[in-house]
Image (spheres, rainbow, N blue to C red):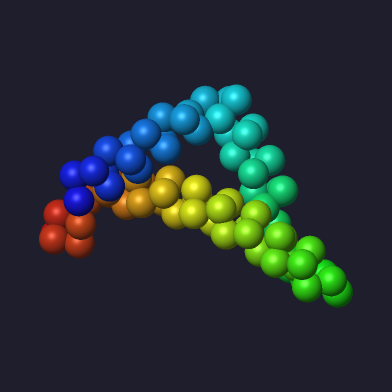
Length: 77
């Protein structure tokens, strides 16, 4: 678990700042995170899905870092 937290923090450091945000937006665009990966050719569609999978993994790692920083429900009482 400690290793996961360190890895999430490392992802967050990589995408900090203007350049990091620019690269992250490009990863989202190339990874087709907001549109279909459908292609009539099965091999191309599999390739598209691979790109999308990696982009979503990066976004999940960044989201995990955000969740670790937020207080839990008991802290909001």
